[in-house]
Each structure stands twice: as C-alpha cells, then as structure tokens.
Amino acid sequence: KRTEADLIVRNAAEVVTCAGGTERPKRGREMAEIGLIRDGAVAAKDGVIVAVGKTSDVMEQVAIGWDTRVVNAGGRVVLPGLVDPHTHVVFAGSREYELEMRIEGRGYLEILAAGGGILDTVRATREAGLAELIAAAGKYLQEMLAQGTTTAEAKSGYGLTIEDEVKMLEAVRRLNMVQPVELVPTFLGAHAIPAEYRTNPDGYVDLVVEEMLPVVARRGLAEFCDVFCEEGVFSVEQTRRILLKAKELGLKLKVHADEMAPLGGAELAAELGATSADHLMAVSGKGIGDLARSDTVAVLLPATTFCLMGESYAPARRMIEQGVAVALATDFNPGSSPVNSLQVVMGLACRQLKMRPAEVITAVTINAAHAVGRAAAVGSLEVGKKADMVIFDAPNHLYLMYRFGTNLVETVIKNGRVVIG
Ligand code: NIG
Ligand code: FE
Figure 1 (cartoon, rainbow, N blue to C red):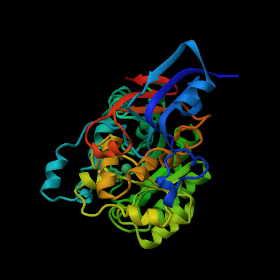
Figure 2 (cartoon, protein in one colour; figure 1 turned 45 degrees about the vertical axis):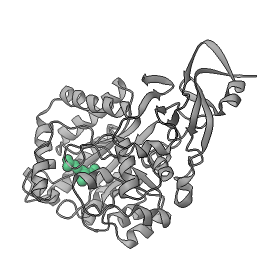
Figure 3 (tube, rainbow, N blue to C red; figure 1 turned 30 degrees about the vertical axis):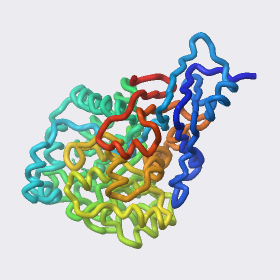
C-alpha cells in the first residue's frame, strides 16, 4: 500500500539528508558524512517526512492525490532547513557607528567597559515596548527565513532587569506564534553587568540567581540559560553559580566561552554537562580535550571573529580531529555580528576555519539541532522528522560554499508548507 503525501519535492540533483546523527551529534570523520542522494526526492504528509530516497523509489512509495503539492527541484540541491543555534535576534536599535571605532583600533571589551557596546543596546531595548521588539525581530527573522534558516535559538540579555528580560522572552514566545522560523528561547540575563550594578557586580549575580532565574523557570519562558563568561564580564565562578542554579531549576545550559581570553569556559561547560559551549576562539588545549570527552557541542561563530576583525579564528580543525562535535551559528546581534545569513557563515567556515564543505553542512543542520536540543525533530531529512527543507539554486552541495555572499535559496519549506518561493 502506498503512503499518502501532501508534498513531494522531486528530481533534485542532490538531496543532502544529513541522516545518521539523531541520537548523538556527529564528530570526527562522521562530520563529513552527509547522506547524499543523487536524483533525490522527499515526501511529506501533515508536516512530517514520510519518504526520502531516489526520485523513482519515492514516487513508487507514495500516493499522489489531487491536492498533493509537487515541487520540481530539477538541477538543484535540497538540504534540511538550516538551524542557527546562537542568535541575539531580539533587540532595539543598531550600532553601525561601532564599525568606525573598530577601524580606529578600539577593542570590543574596551567599548563595553566605557558603557557602550552591549550596554548601548540595553538602553535602547529597555526603552522599547514589546510590540516594537516583535516588529524589529520579525523583520530580521523574515530575512533569515529567506536565507534558509527554519529554526533558530534566540537569547534575551539586552534587558538586564526582571521586567526587561521577561519582555524579551515574551517577544520570543509571541514571535513563535506569528512567523515560521521556530525559535528556541534562551535566558541570558548574565550578558553584561548593567550600569546600575557597575560597582556591585556580585549584587547583579545575586539578582540573576535569586530573582530572575526563578521567574523565568516558573513562567516557562526559556529552555536554556546562557552566561557571557569573559574577562571583565562574568568570571568562571560567577558563571558556575548561575548555571548551577539554572540546572537545579530544570533549564539546559549554554556558555559564551573563551571568546577573547582562555578563562576555562569550555572546561566549565563540559563539567556541568552544558548542551553547548560557544565562540571558543581562545579555547585551551585542555578545554578541547574536555569537550571531546563530553556531549557538549562546540558552536563556532566565524562571522563574529570576522566582524571584530580578529586575527585568530576558533581552532576548528583541531577540535574536529580531536573528536569535538562542532556546529556553526551566525551569533546575529547588533554589535559583534550584524550577519544573519548562515550561508555567509558557511562560506567563512570553509575559508577561515578550514572546515570541509561536508563538515560545514553537518554543522548547520544536525549538529546545530543538537546544540538547541531539537535533534529528534529537525536537522536531517529522515522519515518521522519535520518536513523542513531548503531548495538551493545550486548544481551540487559544494557550490553553496563556493558562491559565498549570494543568497542561493529558491524555496523554503517549514513544517511541510512552502513559506518562501
Ligand atoms: O555573542 N559576546 C557577547 N555577546 C554577543 C555580542 C552582543 C553585542 O555585542 O551586542 C556575542 O558576540
Ligand atoms: Fe552571542
């Protein structure tokens, strides 16, 4: 008996399934295994994949009804909907003037210490109403969707008061109801020490631990808790205190780790069983070893290094060779990475992180899905998973990274529905 389908994408030059990594993120050589099917097809019913394979095989397996949507992907490449596992997409204002400051040689942490940077966006975000935040983020999410992102993490962290952090997470909750990009909410109350706690940073950590986290957990506003663990921001000890409380309250953990200074954020993430450790430009050898022995995914953000005009990128090759599960993200935010295209990140990852194209594809699909706790539902084209797919106007998967800088997306399908194209 044939399986019913309401959507069929067929005749693709390549269907890149990214299959085989649902249980555990891919590491080492597995990262280059992308499950390529030439002349491939994917069929779905009610938003769920029911068949994947050669077009001829899929067409034999499925029943086509009068209302089945058949999409011809002839000569093009089909990938799972891209997953962006680290973004700060909710914020007010913008910081284009920092570009000149950076050209003049002023450092990111120097601008922050002078009350600018993140704290500038905090001022704008505190002033903005909920509707304004939703409108601004909605526009960025539409851009991301049009570039192939169907699932994204979204952090708070520009409120830094209970009300304003809740307002940001409330914006994420509502955005999930009104637009197609599925958002995974992260509480990042520990993103910076707000101006009013400048002389009492531990007082702010108390506020995060004793008041903010319980409210966020009780109201179910976030799945993850993250901390910016960095010199002059939150120390390893403060980070541990916040994350232990978050864990106790049932939240999963992430860490902005070893971005500028090798403080030991990666080691801490592995020790606490964090879902991901992110940035890692300055990770130590021990940090890499600890990550390799853990289930923590390393989320690398090369667009941030590029935009901060950093000299050294995260040691992706060493990590992959030592068995760390690597994912990639945009880190989209108004300061260090105004980039929200994963395609741009993919092109940078090949050229600056020396990741192979197949490893890059794994890093923005199934490994990225693990980094947001969604691997059971998205990140690969396998029967039973969500029908989230992107059709790229590219003759093969290598071309995606080769033509870096151009949006090659032709069609985006989310939950079995064509949302772009
Ligand atoms: O991940 N590193 C800290 N936080 C963000 C930047 C946020 C900002 O500059 O507004 C990041 O790069
Ligand atoms: Fe970030």
